[in-house]
Length: 194
Length: 194
Image 1 (cartoon, chains in turn yellow, red):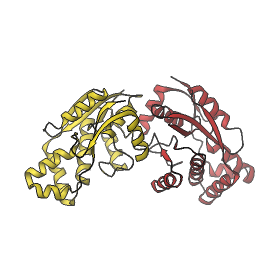
Image 2 (cartoon, rainbow over the protein chains, first blue to last red):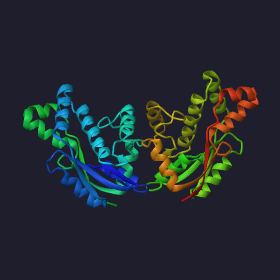
Image 3 (tube, rainbow over the protein chains, first blue to last red):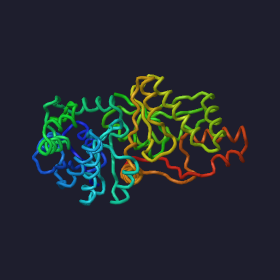
């Protein structure tokens, strides 16, 4: 049984991969809009020892995302839309089990239960969120025991945000980009499995 | 790191144990109101190779449960209340990580997110639901690959329901018991790890 896990190189999707490997053949998959940001994820995938591939999302997905971010004035719904399209891309590619590193307490990216049911029914796929039953403290402890992680605002990983921000900056300027993404989240990239 | 998993001997709590063993020292714990129904769970725990213990719930928990079942006319809220008390009993016993076999699509037993946060904050505990991110198809497949399971309406396991039903039957008669529990759920007990 093979599962494809949407992968950023960060600690959450890396932990999801380790959680699944008891039961599945895990393949890590990073979405790309065409930049080479996926290379950070490839490096992390190699560091923790899982096969890796990429899936290309079309420019219409980026447009939909940016429209939503501009409409609401913050990233949440745009990021959610990209995540949903990414899962659909895996399902459309023939995967029977698709997965990600979304946590119990995450607000974004996250699918609602009706969206999850619709995704599963439309594509005949099982969508697994291995971290959905775990709170922050448990996840932090498990990550600490199993991975060496590089952390800090300047750490490069392959999440959607970097490509989306670059595109917004290109189209609407740095001022708009900074307004829509005011908070610099602490980034993490997994560098080794312990 | 030790985790205590509420255990019935059924496939879901057995799967939860296997999911957690990569990260934790797993101990299976079965609740009892005083009958010897826990012995079925002990047998299943031995069959899949995890340490086992029991925790006694007081008669006031049974009373609370039966009051709720009589009030609503169906078992859901009563079973939920017992499950919450069982998790509290583990937390009060000093466990730092507590867990169960509740699925994504289960209606009962299940805690709401505010109840989960309250449990974690009140006791300084992490409550983990390993199956919370998995739908029915994925779980059924994983169970089939990892366990031999005895199934059928007459299979004895150590869930709350059997002791609660016995108590209702004793206090209010068989007619009331049958009215409150009209559906005979298919039971399962794990007999071997594959």
